[in-house]
Image (cartoon, rainbow, N blue to C red; front, side, top):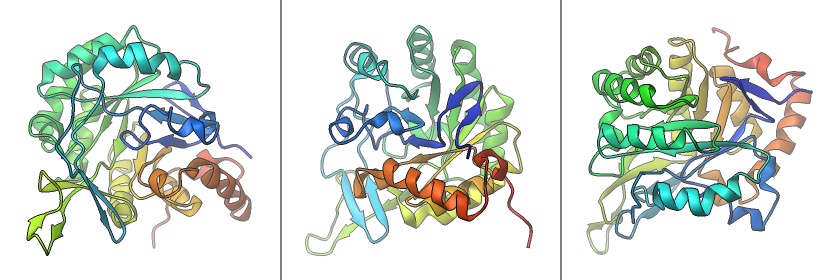
Length: 302
């Protein structure tokens, strides 16, 4: 039974990637299990300069997921290279650096700096809803996507993934803009904008009022957008949005995802990849799937 996947010339031992922002740099989870089981790890979003993130409260629970407004808290490029990358280099898994910025030049500067670092791929985060400048502002219109992806492409020598926002009118236009301007792969979806209210204080729960909704509540939206983008572009897709079972993984791959990222489920089950991988091989056997790659985009019409 084959569960390995190759995209952009990079070999993943299985289709599971720890999603950016939900796994840090892996050190905390390594105290509980061998994190080499992951097919890949996508780092916490990096900016060139260190960021402290948004004020607290930054997290709110919802009936089917969570709202967050962390705001790209990270150690910056220097801190990443000195403190986190040496550890990541000891792992036998694909390492993806998720990068963000306030202006296009920030993305370009960081992408160029990463050329000489031992990361396998770069994920361009142009869809974070939790920062005042940059983030989602770059990822909601084809024109701005063309600008930032085309600019970063000139500096980035690594395989380039572009992470798209669901908070748009037509996801296919943005996916096409990313592909046409140098993306090697597309990941989607980032969180959906939302808010939570405290009825006793009559105030928003999050300090920044609005946050990003993730978890099972957004899975139907993510499946639709993965399917739409699969039928629009030719480059590989990495799907994410509420994955918490082996069945979810197969659903995303049938809709067109070659790989999947697991995010919020890491918080509800710290042993997420162990559970998912064990259940995935059992479910593949039940569904008579010998090669996980064979089902990518194999969604039938009704």
